[in-house]
Amino acid sequence: MKILIYGLNFSPELTGIGKYTGEMAAWLGKQGYDVKIITAPPYYPAWKISDEYSPCTFTKEKNDKSTVYRCPLWVPSKPKTLTRIVHLLSFTLSSFPLLCKQMVFWHPDAVICLAPPFFCALQTVILSKLMGIKSWLHFQDFEICAMFGTGLISGGKKRSKIAHLIQAFITRRFDRVSTISQAMCKSAESHRVSRNRVILFPNWVDTDFLTTESDKTYFRNKWNIAPTTKVVLYSGNLGKKQGLEIMLDSAQALKNRKDILFIIVGDGAHKARLMELSKQKQLENIQFHLLQPYNLLPSLLHMADIHLIIQKRGVAVAVLPSKLTSILSIGGHSLITADLNTELGHLVINNPGIATLVTPEDPDALTKAIIKACDDPHIGSNKINLKARQYAEKQLDIENILRQFEVDLQEMLSR
Picture 1 (cartoon, helix red, strand yellow):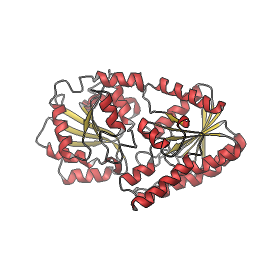
Picture 2 (spheres, rainbow, N blue to C red; picture 1 turned 60 degrees about the vertical axis):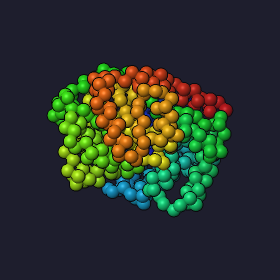
Picture 3 (tube, rainbow, N blue to C red; picture 1 turned 180 degrees about the horizontal axis):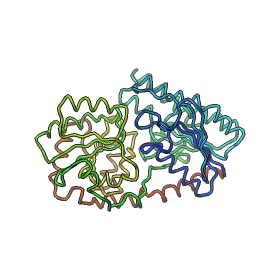
Picture 4 (cartoon, rainbow, N blue to C red; picture 1 turned 45 degrees about the vertical axis):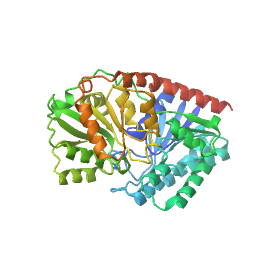
């Protein structure tokens, strides 16, 4: 059976959509599917194309399980709203001829389109209808909702409504629509997609790799962090929509707490600005480090006493941060900034003890939560959050989730 996966991000990107798409393609290949991927050169989260790839040429990579086609991509050095749109359009346009070629001459049984970028959805569904190919649209993020929700795109309710109507019109044309959370499934249904065509397809975690047992001292020794220091860690994409300035506010409020250290690990469009603000505030209790190799992720996460999941208001309703799955799997203690009526809020409320909910965009609330957690003798890098680990084992295991995805995929193809 032939499966075409179409999306901007793919392996070897270590975070975000690329990581999950790469793992999904590898899993499908192991099950015997003939898999092809149309994607771009890896660039995320650094917003810089890796040195071993070209931004201007088409390339083809082949392994035992799949074939990967990479299309030209323009990556802005300083991503802003307009340059992000041009960036997404560059992939949409450069990949279109290759998409046509694969749909017409290879003729897959199904095409799976990943969003973002939603720009690719229109050409995917048109070609699918013309060629009689089953189409599946998977939302990792409702990018239009997020852009309007965080103010990246202005224009008021009228422009937002028009954008949502266009998104809904295109979304309804797919044979299946999936998202990563229950709240996002309801958003898909609000596009008047029938309930039997909306699939919950959550992000997963390798619970055999990210376990409760790992070297907790590797990064403390590497970065000269005392064993008694309480580490407050944020690891992942450093983008504007997260509202990470709130971490700097808490770090400033806790400058006199010499036993608390903030560590930010990762890359992204907003990293330079965060480092500049930290320097301006003369924050000696905060460190910035590059994204670490994936094989060291267990040690990195186990170094921390407290993990931060930071979201602005208007984003947490539509987005479920992928980094949370890793934290839950290692039994970490998380402080999550989200309102009660969001997917993150429901997750914490419905699973007592799994994490701590903090009012979003409230520096004082975050600071108090950090103090309380750091002073709690039952929380720390040497204390496992068993509720978090048990949730990961039952709800987020990679094999269970992808097996169910295969069932849903086969059911779509059989209709």
